[in-house]
Every structure is written in structure tokens, then in C-alpha cells.
Image (cartoon, rainbow, N blue to C red; front, side, top):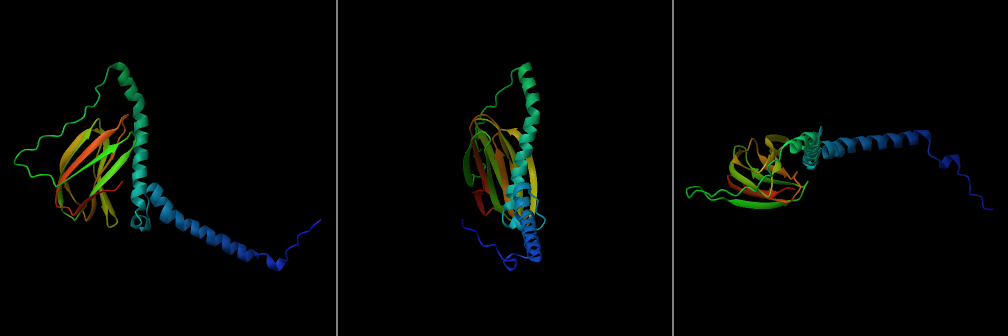
Length: 208
């Protein structure tokens, strides 16, 4: 029978070495928790590193989606009771308004299709005080939305809505950064959202 050699006590780590390794592991875990996990999962960024790495925005969106799901779940019994009491109207696709001849043409137009439960975000790159006219229309249903902005370590929510089929107005940047919209389809069928914009902004892009 083969007997393994018993390690010498000198080859084993000392209690001090074990304690040091444990402390280093705990410190590393704490750093990851503060700089990565909290911003990415909960939108909490005490150090500012998460926003630099664009993790805080991800966490804020996750929290928003969780709040929406919680709100929808709470509203479901009431909606069911209303449905049993009387038939409700199904949201109809909103037809784009005919632009007046005197209105300036739209600068950009973007279209996104959202499956049930899917979300999308489009943002404009703006300087503080820049203004942008916008109009978005949902074809085939309605969406939940959040008009917001972020940049330079700051964030702002301009407006929120639930079950909205269209919206229009003027977006004024509160500070230099990215400003725009997040939409989520809470319906049971695909919808197509069309966004038209014009004004003083340097760039438009889909973030999600």
C-alpha cells in the first residue's frame, strides 16, 4: 500500500498567513460589492465608479423594471374585477398626426419593435439648456415610459407614464449629458414605437 508523505509543519501556512489571506479576500469582496454589485443590481453608487463604468444606469433600470412588475402585479386583481364587471376598450394603434405645412421637418426618426415585456431606450446627447422637440407614437398598443437624463455623475427623471399610446413635447436638458426615453411593453402583443425628434442635440442613439 502506498502511503502519501505527511507534509511537514514548515510547508503548511501559518495562522498569520491564513488570517492575512482571509482579510484580503474579505476586502476584495467588499470592494466588488461597493463598486460593481450595488451599482449594477440596485443602482446604488457610493463611490461613483459604477456610473463611470455605466453600471449604475443598468441598476437603476433593473430597479425601475422591478417596481413596474410589482405595481402591475398589485393592479392585476383590480383589473380583473373591472374586466368582469364590464368590457374594457382595447387600446388602438395611434395614427401619426399629419404635420402642418408650417412646422419644421423632423430631423431624426427611429423605430423599435417591442415584444411583450421588452424594453428599449433612446437618448439624445445634449448640452445644458439644449432643447429638442419630440413626438413618439405606439402602433399596436401602449407602453410604460420614463423620460430621464444622466451625465457627469447626475441623473434626473422628467416624466413617467403607464399605458400611454403617444406623447409629444419639448425636452430641455437640465445638464450636459444623455437625455431621452425608456419604454417598456407591458401588453400581450408586439408593438412598434416610432420616435421623431428635432432640435439642438449632437447625437441620437439607442442605448438599450
